[in-house]
Length: 238
Image (cartoon, rainbow, N blue to C red; front, side, top):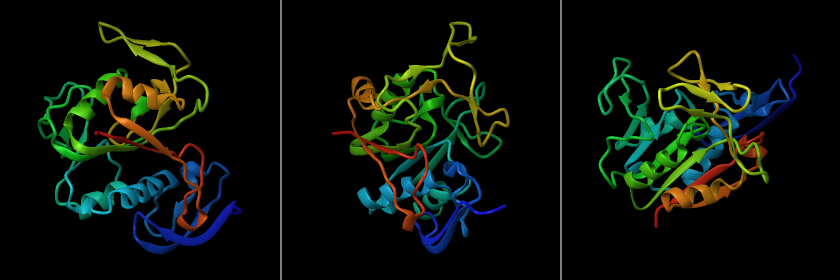
């Protein structure tokens, strides 16, 4: 197969001079680093962490639903005060699951108030039934001056954000749009997309958490950062 894009550059997730390449036009999932296999949104996230919080190795960090490569691996290997969590429904919250992860529901966290300098999430906020609860909980667990740094596909752009699915009182899912799933590192069935976010997400975040959000839109081939829907959002607790 012919490569659509191939170039040399510097990877922020493995700190190496590498080759970035993709055999597909959908760069978001296929424009990979030759050394660590990271994809553009992971490199964009790590670039922003390095740029705005260069002291991140000395900070207390919680990452929700990390992956096994890219920014997640770099944070885990280099930050002594890094904690990672996944969500396993039906398992006690706050305890360590047999798969080795601390079990945390972003909407109902067991962490104490003001526990973290940074909260990290990668393509998580489009899979939550009650994002207003998750955002309030993230704000609660952040220290003053801390931030939630995250990626989420802004698929609706200038259009209003749209709810795709809700959760009923008895746990039944109400589909408002055709069911759509993304990959999940701990569930082979994937994760249901519950929200199509637009740029109005910044107002939504402020309304429900008090966090002030900026959106970093990056495009830099020399850093392997080019693809669809790879904005990085930085929500700060003042």
